[in-house]
Image (cartoon, rainbow, N blue to C red; front, side, top):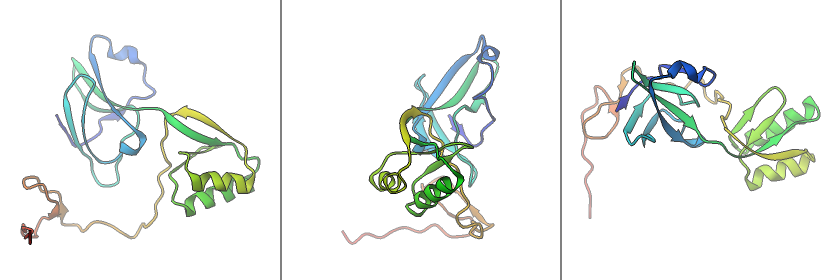
Length: 178
C-alpha cells in the first residue's frame, strides 16, 4: 500500500467507533517517525509512506480507512529519562544544555523527557537534577532550527530510478571506477 498523507490522528478517539472493522497497525519506534517509511503492518501488508516535507508520523495517525478496515501508526513505548525540574531556571538550563548536545528532547508543562545517553546523563549530574527512568511513548518536541532554509519551489520527488532530483534537472548516471 502506498500512502502520501495522514488522514487524521485517532490516538484519543474511542476504539468502539471501529467496531466491525479490521484495525491493522504499523508498529514503529520513535526514531522512525519521519516522512519516508517502508514497513510491514502486523497484518502483513507492506506499507510505503511518503509524506510532504516537514510532516512526520505520530502515534495514532490513520493512514488508510474505509468501511471495512483502518490502518494506523503505533509508536512503541521505550525507555526514557524523565526530569521534573524544581524551578524554571533548572528547566531552562537543562533544556539549553541538552539542546547544545543535539539530544532529541520532549518538553511538556512539567517534564523534560529524553533517551538516555552518556552526555545527557552528565548534564543531569552537573545540575543535580532529580529524574526517573520510565517506559513511555517518546515524541521529541519539533524545533525550527533554520527557518530560512526551504526546498526549491521546483523540487519534486520523481519515482522511477529511485533518485530524488529537481523536476527540471536531467537524470544522471553515476560512473564507477571499479
